[in-house]
Image (cartoon, rainbow, N blue to C red):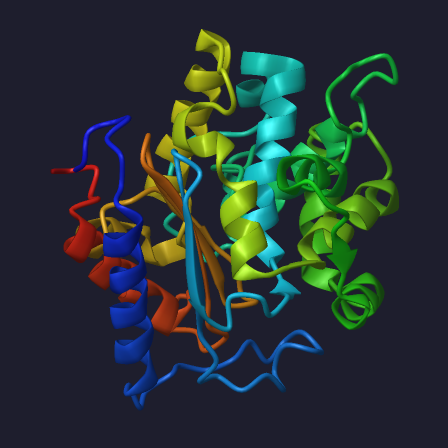
Length: 312
């Protein structure tokens, strides 16, 4: 992998983006759009966008890089970041750090673990994290919602996909079942509906690939003039993205791409080349694990072209 702080030549980056976009344009198998959430199933699966922001501030983008989409589970990265900033290692008393081995919305493992989710990137883990965020003190200088955090990171207001929000607010029965199970084991401090509202809201946040890349900059090296604590937080979040960020496809993704990343069923993927670049990709066609098919392929080709795998 490129060394931290090594300047990435913008011409090389633009050439890599152009090549990746061109290759995605001739692929005939796009995957299947998420059909369990209104507003996602209707999107053309051949859409593709990519944006890269380097540690030096350079940006390269191509395809549908400015098309907004519901970030869904990518929001879990930012929720975890806020929880770790506010509560530190106390977070790990309520959420584990291991890959689940079960689907992201499975309720079976949650019962086996007595209400302690395996990791913060499966649905029950993110619900418990949302419960924690409700306890952030009004006096804290930490942002209290994922939407506030993203607006600060990107430098502009971020919107909500109302169709996705309304659909998930009125349904989401499996998620509510998991929240109730956590509550029954004493791992939810607030009422279920009070927790579900911010959880559903963060999943419905709409960002473009360009905005997503901007939002992930702090994970490259901790942020602007980072402290040791901020660098440590970025390393912790990146480690979980690498091991748990692609649902049951995390091992395959690490093998093929070799970068910390988090996907969402809206078709987005946030990937981080530590110390080098933040990458946002979007293509709504999903593979069998619920990860963007073209997005994964594009990141594999980009990582190989630029030498960005964390494994060398």
